[in-house]
Length: 67
Picture 1: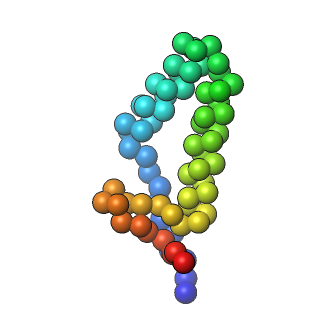
Picture 2: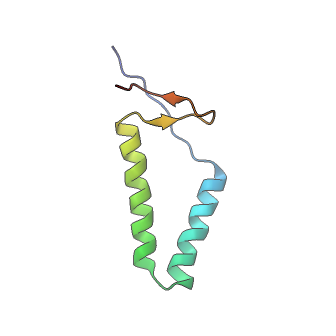
């Protein structure tokens, strides 16, 4: 069985929210290290989902191969 490739894209709202959140943590809370860790953790979670094929469509449908 061949593995399908999927393209992951982010909604502009996600990107805007992430920038706003990290700016708040970095500047308002004066904790840029925590802001960087948050971005790293999100990136790790996304990559893990891609590797294990646990990505969902905007309709909630699971795509990929699952046990």
